[in-house]
Amino acid sequence: MTASASECRAEDSVAVLGVAGRFRKILSTGDTTGIGALLSPDVRVLEGGTVENREEYLSHHLSEDIAFAKAVPEKRTSASYTCEGDVAWLVSTSTATGRFGTRDINSVGAELLLLSRTPTVWNIRAIHWSSSKRALR
Image: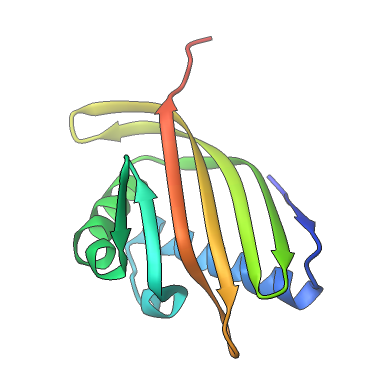
């Protein structure tokens, strides 16, 4: 899977993709070192019909996302990103197949990451995840 870019300077592309990659690595490995630097103080996480702030996400939902990501391998199927000034957004789709607890998982998902540039770094301002059961073929 390769990402396509629109209107991003080379250094912004590297930084934006780096933040997204580090965030996904945290989820897949469970090593939360540095997560505070990736998420802005006012980050919002939208998933399952709810909206969580940074404190809510870090205090309970992050650990659930890590457990799921470690148990159920995910494959990115497409990705694109765009930059406009100090804002960037990444859109990707994925498939996930595996077992989580007592549930068999066979799903498709979509992810939207919204990032903004501070004077020194890019960080995540919003995350939106959605998923559904994959259609049988």
